[in-house]
Image: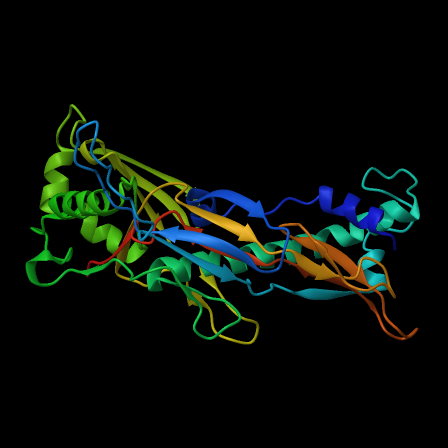
Length: 336
């Protein structure tokens, strides 16, 4: 099977839409090397005093930036290419019943396998993103992962818990939004709550009272189910804050499913405030050749069996590193 056949099959597949990833990832960049330097920061609001025309200016130091060399871990799922997968459609026919070439038959059989591998790769990336959001550490192939700074975590206690119908929710959101803006310059514009928080949020007396405001200036209640795992709850104009309910799960094969977000929590985030850098991928483009570095966000290629009884394999490669625009640019609220 040639790579042209594989590329044609990939063009006919579509990656799944995943809410959290699409909301937060603002840019993706492929690097030319496996290891690369990345600058991260905790933004400051530095200014300098005015000076006379003959006085020296103020030295600005780069201490707000942290630069490090990273080599992302690799996502590498694979599937065997069997006769059943190649000949998934009735031989000699395409989906319209017209004669098909062997290449077209291969495309039909491979589309499902390619989509499955791409979906696994994307779900792995969204799991990495969720772990960064709730722990402050990005998982990698190293046990310690990558930390860009201390997690901005707030735990509500006593009457501030959202289980109390008199909890000052809007004041809490305003205070934390202002804190993040003051420390980073970022104004968070999305609140993501887990489903077990929704009832407490909508049952809050302050929220219910603002919902009675017919002018809609305080709170716009506009529920809409966007997907099985996502629901749009409403909008607080004075904070420019859109509110969503979200939960999804992931699992490693053979292990129990785990929620992407911990129950009883809320995330305050800024849209498109993270980015992904992809390390170059070392692969053999043809059997017998030495490995070469390929600059790409992901690659799907065939690996040929060395013996007649061995199946060829369809392999997926990606080396993502997810980076926040600012290490203090979001907050995890433990609200119940």
